[in-house]
Amino acid sequence: KQEVTQIPAALSVPEGENLVLNCSFTDSAIYNLQWFRQDPGKGLTSLLLIQSSQREQTSGRLNASLDKSSGRSTLYIAASQPGDSATYLCAVNILTGGGNKLTFGTGTQLKVEL
Amino acid sequence: EADIYQTPRYLVIGTGKKITLECSQTMGHDKMYWYQQDPGMELHLIHYSYGVNSTEKGDLSSESTVSRIRTEHFPLTLESARPSHTSQYLCASSERWMGQLEVLTFGAGSRLTVL
Image (cartoon, rainbow over the protein chains, first blue to last red):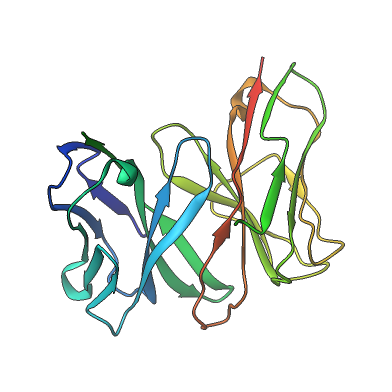
């Protein structure tokens, strides 16, 4: 059974800092991995998707890396801003007989302070 | 702008009531999902659908039921709500499946409280 763990559970940083969010998964046979953002009271927004054959993906100030063999992914946020405050979720996607299946981590709650 | 809509956003009801959470998407996506999320906990897939007239149970056992009569509509129903059903329910859709890249679009969620 795939298990996805995110560390830390919560993080508070001053504005402008670079930070790293961690995601680990127990079964390395994944198809891809996604990072999502969830704002309070709202749904999830997809940030980055990394295919299993890729090592990293970048979008603006966000950079996600994937080390499938060690079961780890990191989300790097450069020059953090208060608007980055949200919960960040990683999800691994595996192929089953019934199609794709996403398993989510519990998330890291990020607060960027002025 | 989200193209997937959930109603109601918030619902507080008494035990034993029948409720339906609505989910509609305007993107023409074939695959749709219902996830359940308790505060501070991970999302759990409770139902999904490959397309019209297709419904499947997810990882987490749920007393809810779903239907998919139209591509754009994937309602979730609880026949008799109980306090243990109190949770947030997130609907999502995706365009591709069966080994293709799958990027999910999520609705804003329906937060259900059963007293």
